[in-house]
Image 1 (tube, protein in one colour):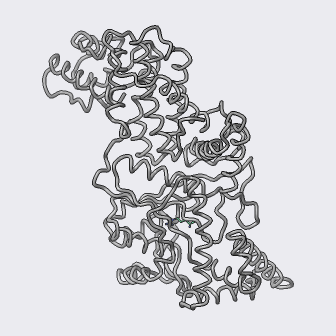
Image 2 (tube, rainbow, N blue to C red):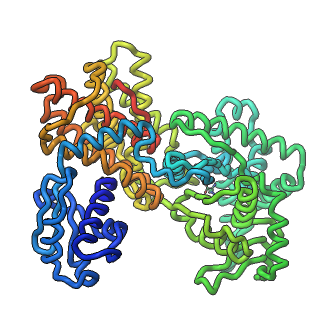
Length: 586
Ligand code: ARG
């Protein structure tokens, strides 16, 4: 439709020039004024002429009437003036033909704005904290991040997906301490990350118990103490100082965790270009701290080194703790500098929960103050929280639902629902996997990312709601029509009178490029999810109301098949952009 709008703007520009003289209005200006009337009986595109009356020094109805009299193009079936509006009704058959031709010519690139050619984007997403559970809270960063990667790739950008593993920090002191006290090698080898999480939960509980005990009988305001916490800090210090034993345990914990994450990524069809985690930047931080100090940006506050951000109404950014150890923002600054050098990105995107928005705003500002001129290429993309059936998650207390368990559950349920229909069990398992994973992702990406989500499995899996299974089923339906049709050759539109259902379907196909642009501009994969539902609705209506394989004559049949073909192409691309597979059979 964007293209139609563009052509319309050019035609109006030419007419206006003839009527009112040269150089008064550009096609771009007119393009910006064009609207889609809410009621299509008024036309498909409208120009509100009151926006022109100042430039042209004429009353809007006069302008509208003059333009309506001047414009004659095969693109339009009717051009009328109503009040101050110029209403244009698109020639249906010409439009449907143009859209199906465009989709065919574009193929897998149909809808791509190609704005990223020659540019690089790095995307930092998923990035779980090693040895802590990979739970459904990570669904957001993982699928929003990956979808943004796919969208940017689609737009021609060179993309680098980075999993910035949380593989460093005081939690490793705790874990190493817990392992040395209570851990068993064979158990971790057998149980993997689950055993690490158990150790982590246990030491946190015991530290808490020691701290509580230390406060008994003490005056209010006393700082709690815990020998286990001291021990954990000592273990972390050893690790930071390069102690071989601790390093070996740490490396092992990282690899055990990674093996587990990779199973989930594989199910989701996700892979990363880099796994450089937080630990990688340890030796890259001192140079940045030095630079901050030399620039006079560091202040000492209660022993810690900070960058004051008062002027920007933000709390200070913490660079070094009292004991000289570095912090999360310091690491992010060092990582950004490294990535700029390594990839020379045009944009660096970070996808995390909205809870980290302040952290990003702070260190982005520090990067700016440090004089890095690429500070404005850093983009934080936040998202809301996830709960399941209304209950919130808490990592420490054990009310944790692992992402893998959620996906496995979805796959299992799809398998139960579909197994009767499938004589071939292997095929059924493969399809269940695609539909189960698709259901979870689609449900998650249905709302604006910033909204909090309550995950309800039944709703996600419903075949007749606005769900992933419904979208995949619609795709398979289009495929099945095309398989039954075989090679149908080229459709001939000459003199064909399209009906409104066909026209509405073509319109839905034609807005895809606009939606891709909006999704990219807003960093919002849900724009694509909602578009998929719009396209599915238009196609299903067409499927039920227009005979395709049994159409009244060969010509109509071919025209309708060409629409099916275009739906298959666009729906397949759109599903791909939100990380969903599109099996041809369900
Ligand atoms: N590991 C962090 C967490 O789970 C997310 C990291 C986000 N990326 C970044 N560059 N800070 O909360």
